Length: 114
Image 1 (cartoon, rainbow, N blue to C red):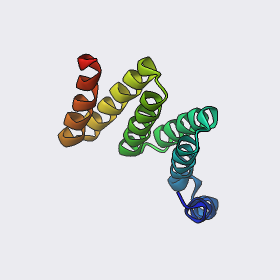
Image 2: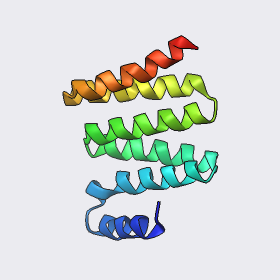
Image 3: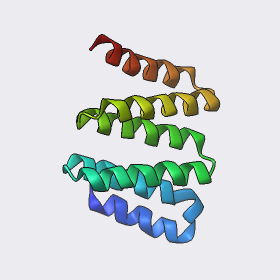
Image 4: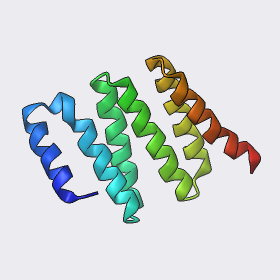
């Protein structure tokens, strides 16, 4: 993730914290995850989820939970991954996106196959 994208969002956050805070945390989490900084990634995913929930962006909360699920799956923490995927599924269901619910169900099904 280009650092200038994160910098641009941080600048936007100064104008509308409510709208951009969760996006900054999510991009930082993805960047940390990509670079193997797992503790920082975990903290940033948690911050993104909380910020999205506080801003009542249920679809972005779902996205943050989904990406956190992929992160935890990648590092071998399948219990946490399962939990985050289930949280994402609930967010997407509350948002009304059956397509995303079905997508998450496919991810959850992969756990049952192992």
